[in-house]
Image 1 (cartoon, rainbow, N blue to C red):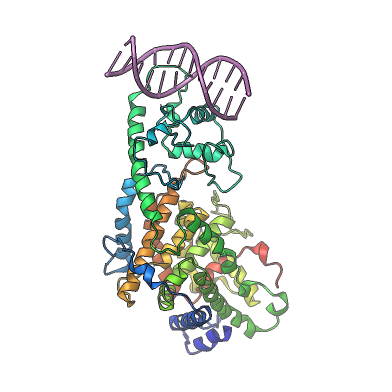
Image 2 (cartoon, rainbow, N blue to C red):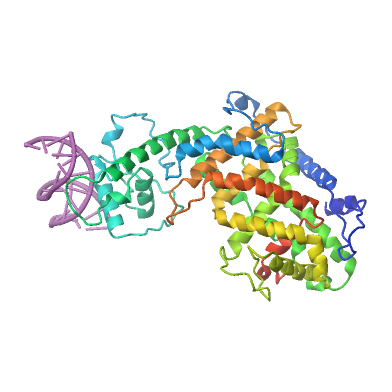
Length: 491
DNA sequence: CCTCAAGGCCAT
DNA sequence: ATGGCCTTGAGG
């Protein structure tokens, strides 16, 4: 398999650069063909069971497909199409819990008699929500004593009358998500009387948001394909199958001390091998996606061919943010021996790249060559890294962004109309899922990154990816991101 | 006055 | 720490 790549890129000889990196450019054509090869191979082995009947009955419910001329405005369309939801949910905590299981579509009468947190008997409104005495007291004590709880599970414990005391963290989160306001607990402990007008209007505002959010979540729970898990389960599956480490720590990047210094030719082959592995890993990732069976292989090929560079940058960026210190205060003049990637200084990263290249190739590379060859890309990547780290995305948000990125069709897509609709529907679903995730009350107070901020970052990712595509060294992010501590040993 | 929602008390 | 019941007091 790996020989494919090397064979195909031999033809492409760009002589304009000095022969320091005498590996050949990995042409896009080669990428496409290789993807085609992998995916068709996949298709025959996997024999996906198509379920056409189910799809027919589901209405896409897309107001309009993002149709624009340029790629950038296409993403702007994506932003604006979801802007409605965004304003609807206006930057505040939401429900998403409690998965309307208990059929009873009790609209108002019975609901007001039940505690909205644990469904015990409600004794009226407390701090903004209809709750029982237990949840009222629990909320008051939590706020008064400034308690900070921690969930020992996965932050998604069910809260009902029976087990409401099993997880304080989830109980408190649910209190918040149901509209209880910490401001309503009085600092001065003055009993009786009424709370101020500001708090009262907050109650109203919060309740209207919660009502709209509930409708929204219920709509998203009606997922586009039956095979797709819903809500948190979908995100959980995505996180579990992501295997970011495998993509970042490619075998080709491991330093083999035996062969590193021995001969030059294998060293150069190693660089093209890295390209092989990137495609391999992305294909592996694609085929384990929860919606893999929902799209024909041609569609996956098409999407991956268009989006692989963005996926690479996104993955590398997320990896960098999660492995290295999220916020390095001053990286300005630490160019010496820091193995840490810089979020602000491209020179540091170029130096890093220089070292890594020297290790992989087994010979020293002059800094000027590295700079000339990869300067633009590294510069761009550093900027991208910086803006990405500001978003502070969670693993859950990251996998959603990854899916959204993959499912982004160009306006001039040549795919069949029904396929295009499916892809758009899927992407829409992941945008909504991300939105719901972002509005979950976080464990650590403020995660104020909004959906709009993330969606507005995507064009930047797209622009950077075009630089990557025009670069001869598209594996650069991996050379930068490679955690030095991990490559001491080789297989 | 009565209502409602806030705090307090205290057996568990 | 929990939660059932009690006290308080501004607003209608």
